[in-house]
Image 1 (cartoon, rainbow over the protein chains, first blue to last red):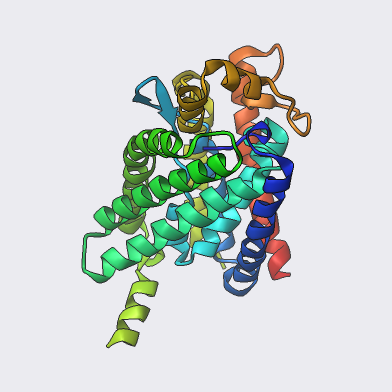
Image 2: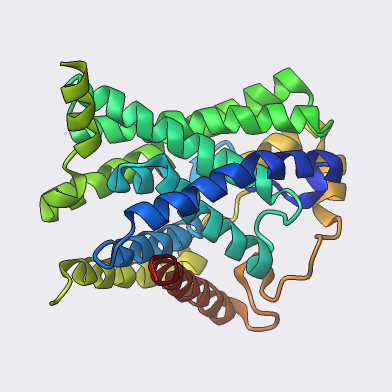
Length: 218
Length: 98
């Protein structure tokens, strides 16, 4: 879902930068508050793992492929959508500058779509399901899938505003492809990763956010 | 004091390097969701035009490849990216806490 520079006029690309920058700033503030020497290796591990897995495009049929975004996974493990914003910002910077994957001028839009939208919806979807005592892997699957799907719809709307895609066909095409990419590339891998981490290191996914919000509502 | 999270870092890094080495062989070369959508809704001709458009900057390893180095170049490019991003995020974490 990496938008290339040619898909959006510069004037609009700058607007998405203006929207993305406050989120990037808040993600750095999150890191300053929440990061410690114990957590730095987890941040580094997730960043490297997500960069690698984004290079692995999975065929989804219809002559199309897709890959995991990973912001939801990062947000769930750190208990904050800002963690997903931070990791995706770093990954998108390296991808755009070094590998020409995703544009430079449109990077703000890519950070907004993949870092902010997919990660936040993935995370809050996960938390909402966990509060209803739904299995941790099922919650991770649905949250991550929904995050990717919604961010693809947002991308389609941005493409329409940019004059690149017609609105309705764009939403239908983006939605159709990412409905499937979200199941295989995002939902399944996020659920497997969360399941594995919950087994090996239950302390890392102990649903602190869920517990805290339960206490508040009670 | 040893940090138990370093073990997690080594395990995930090993997995990430494995994916980086295999990706050039396993990754689908089909267009991704956005490219497929573009082909479908704006037509192949206009899509090809946009695809050929100059990027805002020249990247050293475009499309995760090194010119003239084939699959080996792709493996090296993705591995460099994986290790580079690990170093950047580790460094950023250290700097931000310093």
